[in-house]
Length: 447
Image 1 (cartoon, one colour):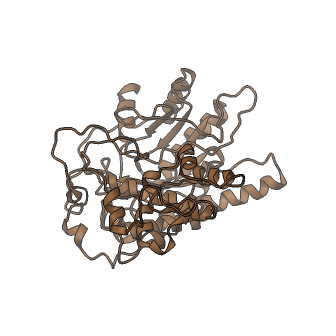
Image 2: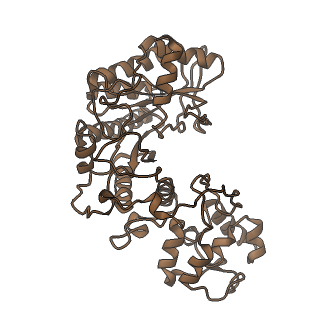
Image 3: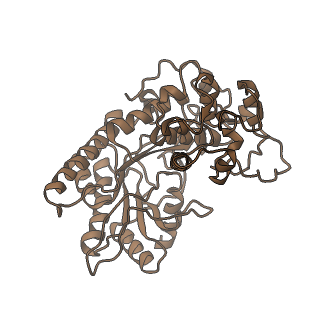
């Protein structure tokens, strides 16, 4: 194969890894070097076939010794295989950077030979870029589960961000769908990366010119829908990962049915709505002060795909509403559906000089479509009288969604015209297969 044929195969094989993050690093190249990385991050987009435009997003190889049920690159699949050499990736990265195609590199790999052999190749690529090519652009490197601590240490000294993918939310699911991978082989490098970050920050406090270690932190990824865990189990694991390993991000990837396997659920399409709700809940935990136990419990272990998690939480806690805009604290305002961090700050700042009314909130771009049911201004509601939970849910119930409609972070925008196709109901996104309806109380969580 020539280089472009390899690039076609291995860029396409990398599209299922969603944790392609590129922010948080402050690596500055010295005079005469190429590239730099800024804390604001590299803006990047994806082409129709999954390629990352601003980061060269590739696998080193899609040859794999593992046979994970959900993975397109598993060894039992009959598909085109390819592998880059270390020098080929270095050449591609430098050539693409000089042509202004990319600003950095996202490098992962299937497992070839052994975890240590694969990790050694990945580290060699980054070390050649840093030390031989004098490249100081952003590099996100995959940590291979089971690789030796020495290799993880070397990787942390040259990469801006490391990520070790969790893949599945429980040890039992890991044993069932990815029997070649073990829980401890995933958790140990995560712990080493966290300890390395803490240690190097302490060294840099004493010696400012000490080498940095994973300056953009670490991330991980979980597949949603390939196994039977509910949203509560996934959210609890996500919270534990932030707490125990100081994760920058936990990414969720809706299960894409690319293989025929009796161990996998039969679904018509990836559960994108479920993925979207988990991302919203993750955001609420990281920036809005919510706990996983507040958003879900054993009685209600899954998110309603039709409603924002804050709406469901607010409806289930009517005793906490309405909030008076002119007296509610900042933390209380954050729990009102339709009021975000920026709006809450504006409200707290503006009411220092005058009492606010709904016209003021509209000028602040507060989403009154949702917030009106949970707030008052000067003791009065906005266009509603004594709202009740069922009335609120009915008013906020979304219109029928085309299965091909793009998800949006801005639900107040007008919906795109629906295509003349049959509208799928919830059972399409969450089919009642044997794996989805069974009692999973015996699943063993990672923590």
